[in-house]
Length: 145
Image (cartoon, rainbow, N blue to C red):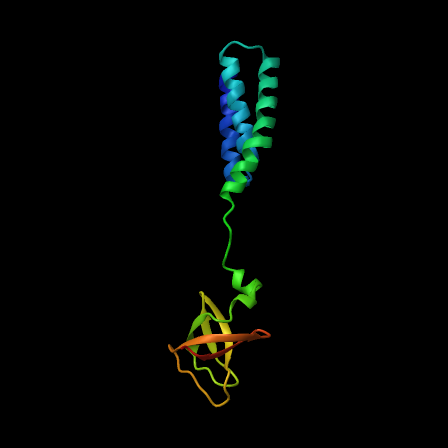
């Protein structure tokens, strides 16, 4: 009967992990599963509790950090936002007509306000341009060579 209780606790902890999504309850579920195994082999309750504690702590300290590192996906979408110095030299597509005072371009999936480098020069929508520099939050663009 006791192995079934440990197994039930393991299942409940695994289901709780779906809500928490921190991998901690999943490690405890592994400890409960190990305790169910030791109980099935005829170990007394105090041994089951010790197995649960040792396995749970070992999983939390070893497996959980490895899983969290492996599951961490580097979000590169903000790379250009946080490092605008990487933009000069990149090609962009004009979304809204660019003049010496205003416009909108798309570079790397991001929209940037833009203005033409040369006063009096205009770029129509869908035209390709090259970013020359970043001035504040505005990209200064010129013809693509």
